[in-house]
Amino acid sequence: MVYLLLIVAVMVLDRVVKIAVTTNMTPGESIPVLDPIFHITYVQNTGAAFSMLQGHPTLLIIIPGIVLAIGIIFVCAMAKSFNRIFLISVSLICGGGLGNLTDRIAQGYVTDMFDFRVFPVFNVADICVCVGCGLLVLYMIIDANRSKK
Image (cartoon, rainbow, N blue to C red; front, top):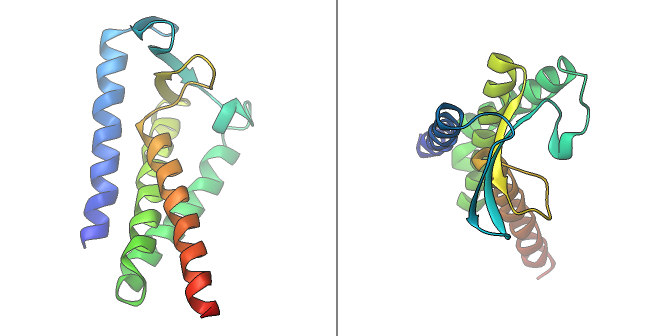
């Protein structure tokens, strides 16, 4: 149950930030926060990560939808069988994925806003997916080392 709450918390935080940006900015508008390093820039991304697969909206809904459904079922059904770090990482990935999938289904694009000028613009959901993936990799490295011993 705690992992489902984490998924929902990620989705809510992502939605709150996206609503703040979309209600106070126009697409393409950029506000310097730490000029020239960091800006809040309102971008409507119709592609996947780094704007890949633009023009394939059905693919960008079906594949993540299936993967996220499997992830959520996995977290719910297997919570007692797996390590807490593993489940937190999967929950972060699912929460972020659902945040972006919700955008894609409702609007046809994902709202991005964090702009470091040397990297593609991203959002809270993207951060959670990346942190979740990083934790998952760390978990797998640690678990592999434990298995060797």
